[in-house]
Length: 237
Image (cartoon, rainbow, N blue to C red; front, side, top):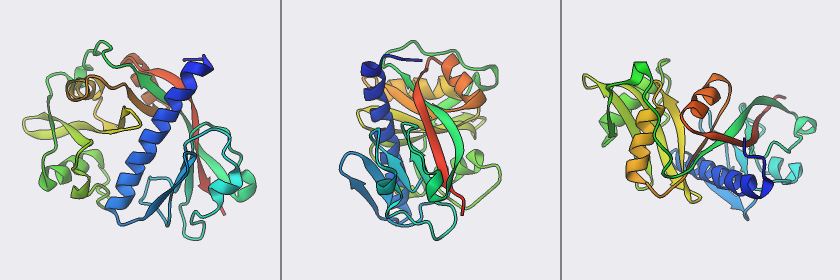
């Protein structure tokens, strides 16, 4: 883990802003208006899509009241991404849903070898609505409601697909913002292929994201370094 605060904190800020901009894109694709409060906070004006936070802190030491104020705690599922793991929202009716680590990989770092189950995959970018539907079906084995709409197929966002025999079996989302590339929604033991595609498209940009548990261990094996903790809080009342 990078422990030097002068190095770590700017990287976490970039990762948090990148993640907030990806959340913003998903929300707007679903018709949910969003807002930024200066450089300290991003939030949805009403309930955000499933698995996406209602607010993301962009700076440390943001007052809890300014985070909770304005988010929708009436309808079920309100959540807050505490990007610096320094909020205490328990008194406002929230509980910690999970904890994770922001991760960082410098531009130009050597690419990892593909995991055995991902070796030989053919990688490309999702090109249209039909491919996006197939990508999401591979990503979501439960077959839930469509989360990723064709509006997200735009500059700065790519859905990467690893295929075997023409069938999508691995993938991730890569999105630019905050001066970095953020990788999210990874599936299918895909780090090697995803990082190869990201490096080819944006060779000058560092790569960030967040993971926990075994997924964090896999990211570290792929050359990422943990740079700081985050928490996701869920409204429990």
